[in-house]
Amino acid sequence: MGDCGQVLNMLLPSRVFLVFAAAHTSLGLNVNARFDELATRYGVHSRVRLATPPGKERGLFTTSAIKAGEPVLAVPFELCLVCRAEPGDIKSPWDAPHQEARDTLLARQLLQALFAEEAAEGEDPSAPDELREFWQEWSVMLPELHTLAHPITLSEESCRGLHDSQLSHAAKLQQRRVDAVLAGLPKVIGDSGVDARNALEAEAAALRRWAVALCSSRPFSLPYESAREDDEESSSEAQQQLAAFVPFIDMANHDAEPNCYVQVMAPAEPLMIHDCS
Image 1 (cartoon, rainbow, N blue to C red):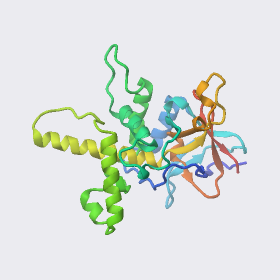
Image 2: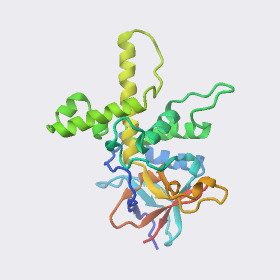
Image 3: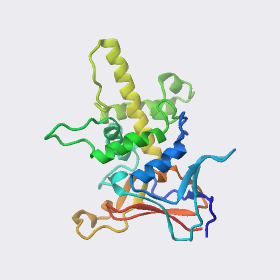
């Protein structure tokens, strides 16, 4: 049985897309309380709290004793950013410049949720209302713009500071790929002059790269273990793999000796962390 206040960590699934360390957010507000508030408001089953103990990393801690096999955190599927592995999907976006991959597929959803306006009557929304509203509120839990050390987010000067021509060149290639694949996102509004518009375009490019950096470090791949019988597309092996950006669960730390694991339920059902200590 897990003790109350036990720190939770999980083994990173073996089918991981890309792994980079995500920077901690530095916000002038209580993100720990925000975690609890959003969990309650959006129907997340939670027996954890977000905390940063003195001298330790921020992470999830149990709020009561939990038996092995009990769910400690269940996130409604509709709050997640999800894409399925398509047949022929490249394993890494680094292999094919200017080709869509899981990082840009998820980043597109993230940008549409964060920056989409309400659709006019008769128009299809770029993101469902609840998803858009949730991610705009959850965004305060994400690392701030210009705080990530992912190669895609580096400035020209920072790329030169790598003192590695191959790594610098690779970062620039991927920046071009992201800008090409996600061109037009987020939408730049305003025509107050060339300089102002150029500044807006530069900020839009920074946001695209920030979103891709998040969507290559924080999501993970999971088996789609309990497909519904009425899902005609669920039979192929490729359709059984999901790449998911799962809020709340993405606050858990990874460990080689985990005391939790993540299980995917059918769509419209939660994703869960189970205590297996």
